[in-house]
Length: 62
Picture 1 (cartoon, rainbow, N blue to C red):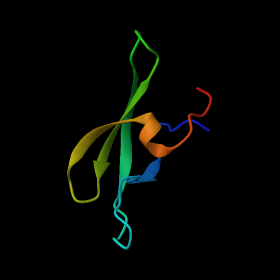
Picture 2 (cartoon, rainbow, N blue to C red):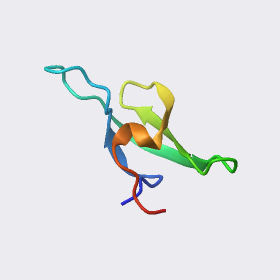
Picture 3 (cartoon, rainbow, N blue to C red):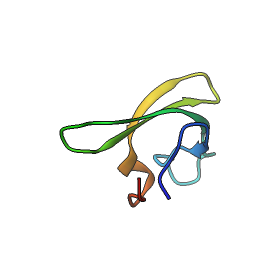
Picture 4 (spheres, rainbow, N blue to C red):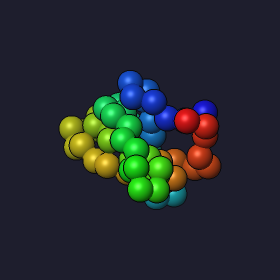
């Protein structure tokens, strides 16, 4: 299933053995040129970051 605004996610780029970082999805934006979605996350440490949806694994429908 596709990631939606308001969901909590874990940072997919965590190094092995490190504590995973979690955050809240603020928005999900779609690039009209290629339909790739960008996920904007506010991590629990306060950092706001944009990640390609593909960072989180296989694409869902949506």
